[in-house]
Length: 105
Image (tube, rainbow, N blue to C red; front, side):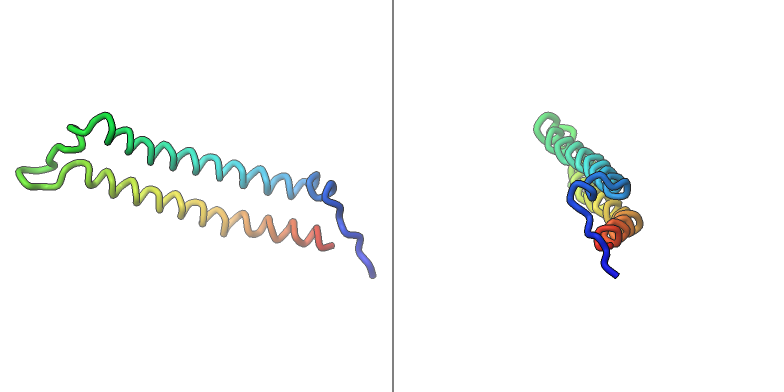
């Protein structure tokens, strides 16, 4: 039993492939924009409001406000990475498998 291989044109027009591509583009754009806003927002805060970041949290010799904000920036970057990993494991991988099965016949 021989199965006909799909052409590139057929693959690109396949409903599952276009859905996969659209979802990947959407999540990638959203997470990229969030990361850029987070990172450049922190950099802008450093550039334009150093006195705010230099304020002590409590008393003399205590940590400044800038330290937890910097740590928060790093942690939120990890969270955004985790969101992508969760999405990829729960949605993307199954869609890729479905498209591969269609392509291979």
